[in-house]
Length: 509
Image: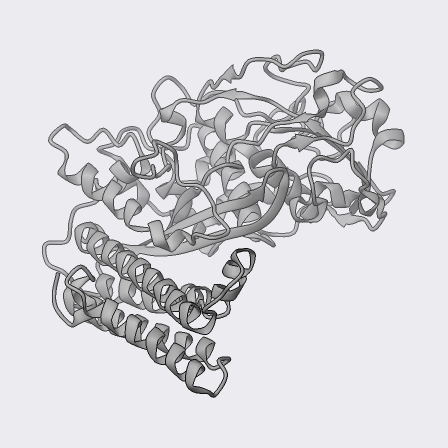
């Protein structure tokens, strides 16, 4: 994203939308920050009426170069009384001017604006680091503010409700994307990316949330409100998930103080979760996990498209995956090594949080080509299943080594002792790369069954090596030798069982 103007964000947003087909992507220090900027650009497009007229028009509309210029023109022609000033005293962009009387006394340093720098969002604990006065450049502050609106974790705000706007301003609800994976379809340019993620609208686009103190009536903070109804996609993608106010430095180029509290609550329905992928058996959208990488669930993305394409009912383009299924399927798979006629990346982003503490951003990019979703699903599903089976075998092998190495263990020490021989961590860290190769080869027209056998051999060989390295810590005596042989034998035997994935035995499923 281009550097923001000293005070007026509008000018550079106009340039970004006008030149979107000449830009590769938006700028951002984290995956979540990039998503937040895309969300805001989508909101502007919807508010300006820049979106496809129907599902039938959507595939061709995605390919229209410069189709987003009407959004740039709409933004450039906003009336003078509709300010887009980050530091306007009455209508600051994306902020709540009602906090102004309390900013100097109750605010914190700008670090509070950055999700990764806050720490525990139960902020009544000692948070001295948030007082650090180092100012943030305006562009970074703007992007961090958008990220708070979209991904802010739940917790208790540092602000005093009694001394500011009311008791419930301290109640930080998890914001719209803070508890699930967001999936964005990526094109070759920013313009194509935005068009891929803009949907036909029924019932009007709704109102863009430019500032807390203008437009619709918003919640108060004397009691917890019910979630308000969403008026349309412009409202959804620009909602103000935090009440926040920024104080500029004298030169207007940095932010040196921040006041942050609870924001709007929305009543969301399935129509507001168009990109969500539901985990089988849970009914819940896929969520970010510190222990389960997104690629292990990637087959759910392809299943959603395949289901949409094969559905007997008319495809109305109601979800991202139904719209992707509207692209004509390739009549034949690409020749091995050749790019498909149309290639899209499915980018998944989530924030891992442990209770009220943000831990890490997780993201993954998975290839997609219209008409190949069934093969991509097969490769992804079997690839994940193979990796899961190998991981389970590694644990069994570690247990076998432990049972020999520790014949009289103390129950309290069992887990730590087994962990000595457990190579699952190395296995999962090393498997993402061959999985990516598997998916890329499938997208490029390689035989999926052959690619799966090669992938299985690579994963199993690496896993056995990791296990052997963990067993190297055993003593060089008869007991250590027996434990090593028992563990490696268990590993080999488990992979040869009939219940093991066929590819691990060199066969085709």
